[in-house]
Amino acid sequence: MRGDGYYSRGGGQRRGGSQQQHSSSSKGDDHKEKKKRDAFFDLKKYLDKRIHVKFMGGREVTGVLKGFDQLLNIVLDDAEEIVHSPEEQEDGGASAEEKRRHVGLVVLRGPSIILLSPTDGSEEIANPFVQAE
Image 1 (cartoon, rainbow, N blue to C red):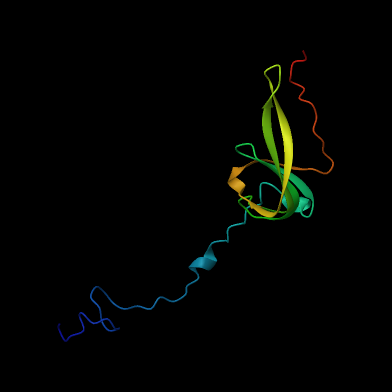
Image 2 (tube, rainbow, N blue to C red):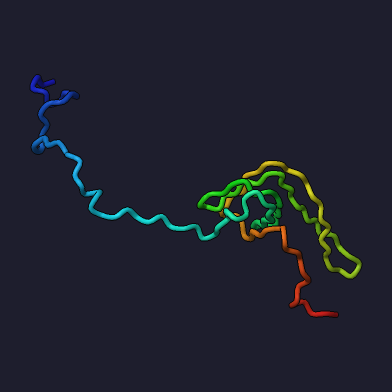
């Protein structure tokens, strides 16, 4: 080792230029702060209300909305999973038998959600595009 501080780990002179202290300049103050983007979905009006959520892959959950974030991750309380089990009918078509399973407090991952709707004030209607036989 050399004794001149070249390999030392402490402070002192280093190669490659002068040692200047960077003062906190007003560079950050010159440009305006970026405006925070509003959420695409305004779920605040559904807080503490019952909602219905459908996922990719066919899973469905209903529950009371307790919280959410920017990525649409959702916290539901008193949640129930709706399990559809297709059964073959005599005519070859499939009917969906519906079972409900209570799962309690859950966190739902936002990117896998494909549909979100309030359950209060809404009801399921018949598909108007199905041909009547």
